[in-house]
Length: 432
Ligand SMILES: [Zn+2]
Image (cartoon, rainbow, N blue to C red; front, side, top):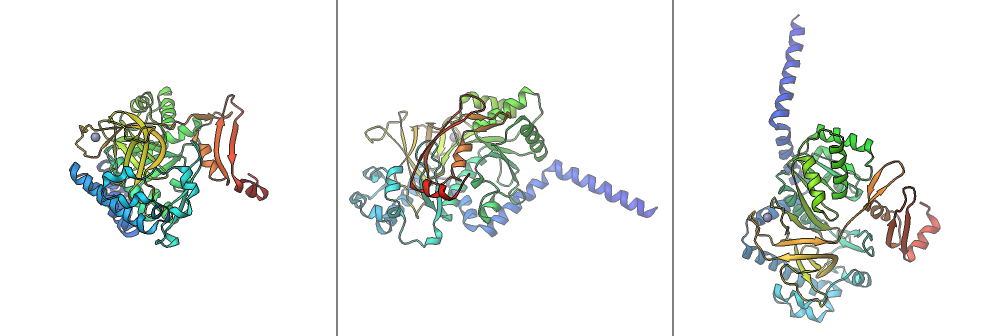
């Protein structure tokens, strides 16, 4: 009799405890604490970078400019001494301040390909070089390098932007994404750890599997996991939001949603916001230089991570556009010392603005970006995948410089590609 009472008591205690944990958010608090300490342990640089970029928000505009200017001059000094491509540029000797940046020539994908070896810093040991490449979906694919130091700053800026939704680092998040390089299937142990559900309280759902059946599963997963942040491509999230609202499914409301990887259109934003009943903030970045800019709660222009990059907008003569004028976006990555990107023409168009944002952040404003759009590819089984499915497929096929996908009818896809010399060699031995 006593034993039964004891068991009943334990059961009741566990029930009360689980309700308490669920309702008070203790689980999340524990996760936030664990996350910060794990980070301190496994990745001190990352931890420091997150603290640094968070503190940078306290800077005045002048302090931010000084900080950016210091980083720029340090990078130039490094390039002058150790990067063969820049050592040969006469104009680099005339760089004495950040205002002299415009004296340097632009860097293009073509120039990078041509001077690939000369862009590698000679004073950095080989094992620090992390190979990477762009997709080739909107032009030629391009190989480049980054390193851990660069990557942590990029991630820290991304996390800072994500936190503007109201989400706190360590709180549950759901990512509807396609790049396995960026998910738990990443090749490196660190990559896998960084995307671990257990460690970082996040789950990744594939944007390549978006049949009605998949989306029904995603809804129950999301409702169970209760993320305070959802991240995804605008096209995938719009599709998902439409599916939810059309079928009157119930879905939890996170603190905010971040979209990235392609342009976000206002009707898409409206659809996603209405379904999830929260704000959708746009993020702009790319594989080559990482995080560039992020919207805040004002949803009126993107704040540039000017502590990580310098963004210029230039006209066809290569001169700076005035505030409000559309031009080509040129980016200088202030953190990549292994393979410096200085005045890099990224391939998108944009508009800079002089105005001060109502949110109080001093980071400068990129009014808008024009460029990336991905259409959805529809399969005969009803599956809908964003166009970047092919972008990522390209990573598996060596030797493809550029490609284009066309779908006119449901069961036919036309794939055009431009190959380089490695393509032939590769296909003598491999069949996909
Ligand atoms: Zn703002």
